[in-house]
Image (cartoon, rainbow, N blue to C red; front, side):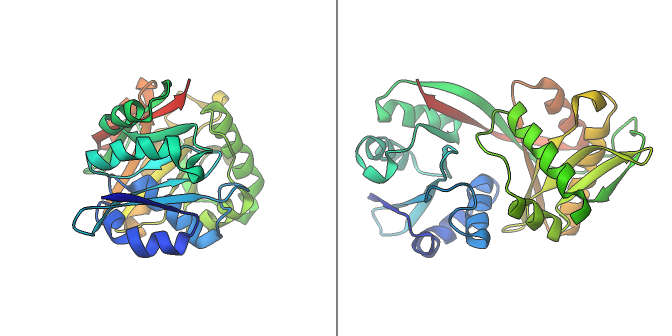
Length: 279
């Protein structure tokens, strides 16, 4: 049983794609990162080369993967406990992982990895993964309507996604290439009221029949009017129309308002993930 680490995306996909794709719900973040790197190149998330890792079990089969795209956390997919424990030793010893200062993992795995790493960490964020059951319309319905974003909306999308990143303490803002990519498949929806944009939601391309909503953003002056619920409902329907059999999203557990909004739309909890940072 062993970890293999590499900066070679093609090698990672050849070795680990089947095992990662076999669990499209719990591996949603890992799958969307790999898809972006495959589509837009190794620097889709920043100037530093990403690092990939995959776990080979005793029988020779690959059983899970991780990816690190600095300045973002190391993201763990679904892994057996023994792989998570072994990853802790690798974090302390493998030079390819020297840049890792934070990681994002399923709650139980985060505890195992923090202990195995042997270095002090603190919880930076707790997230809950939801999947959509039967989509329900917001009640009461917000005023306005949704429309797909177009190239003319690029300045607005750049501004709002940057504001979202700052508000959520995300270490980098989406590039123009990533915004254009989402526009190309109808992945951004804008909620308008009175002819002006008031909220947005996006969805990722369906991968393995699953798509994830995010980000969802409403400027502070437009909040508490139901626009986020309206545009999330529209984005969820659009994701289904784009071929997603499963529609997913993450919420910050520190935000009870967003958690209750999404539950009213028909989302149900799957599992929690934790981001831990070296103290």
